[in-house]
Length: 499
Ligand SMILES: [Zn+2]
Image 1 (tube, rainbow, N blue to C red):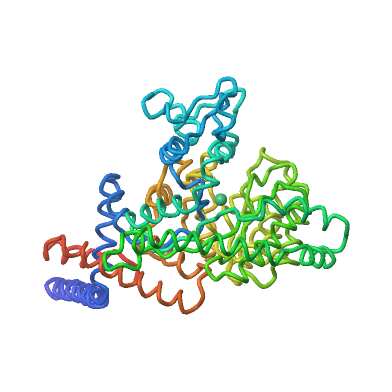
Image 2: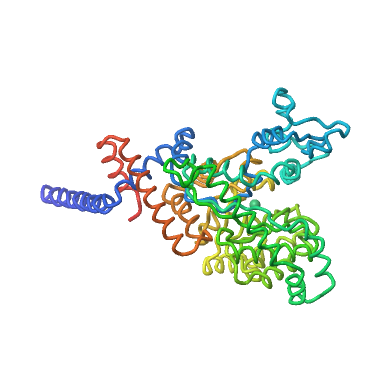
């Protein structure tokens, strides 16, 4: 009896082992179909605790696109210093670059001095970026230092659209990023005051737009379009894009988004938005508009809903991305935290939300998440910038909540030059701080093309290009390991990954 019982037990154990082996084999067969992806995901996990290997992996990994980058904020201070020196500009004691005629002001120094004065050079790099930032009573927060940087190098960035774009295209190429939408300011400076004055005499939006059109909106937009077209021509020829030996940056597809400064009076915002919307309709390489500037600013807060209505009225037919919810408790009173993301979506029709950090403070967060998933509305997550500006990082950031709710997410750089980062760094943070796996990061990279503002045919082409680049990347990762290592990784994946 005892012997028979033991035999039965052995048979049962054997059957269980055989069944388990069969299931694993079945999983191996299924996973072998996506062999390179499985091996790449396994390599990524193996590198997770080795930050050097992880960063190198993420640098090589195709990252699709960057959908949230302010062109002037993306350029490193060192470039601005070199350009300002070439133009013989000066810097005043407040570390603001000033035009030539102001060089004889008290305390002003030629920027070119920095080229042989390391101390001055360091001082300027620190002033134009978040490098070595320490709070002082004059500049008590990263928020203030960050936003102040734009004005400090504004005299240089304002005249270097072509150089800045070329600089960035080369950077993105070196980081395996194939597509970018640069946020730039573009308005008719000479007509601005006249336009604002003209529309201020009417009250209805329709009358304002009519007045603006009668005051020469069309001419202004045509002139802006010519400036942009000429700049794009110069960029392409500087990189020899039409020559047989095109330079690397040519492989990066780019578009522009027009930014409107939200800390202006309503009629000024109206004019800027009308120009942006008309330019998007006229020029296919200008794909959307966005509202920028501190969302916690006095005017931005007071006029928030009015701004959303202006966008709804002037730009119902053009793509809109909006900075919304770039706020946190303490920065503004609680009521201001409760509606910005929702109004950007429901009133202004934003298809993309920049930052979306204040999610938890929104009224009916669950309902908002469901709406974002259903529409869909994508969130442009800028981890480093949010850390530096708002002090929100790690578990306080809503990235995991967006992902868990099925809201599409992209990782973007915001102002890589001011933050002294690159896009790879944001992928590293996502992997390091939120445990995102290779497949999740790859889906996020692909989202940057899916939720780009390219037209359908262009999007299809860019997605096909991304899929080819990803397949090539994964093949190269898999081929670096021995067949035995790959076989072990495959079996391990079959045992551990969910079916
Ligand atoms: Zn931004």
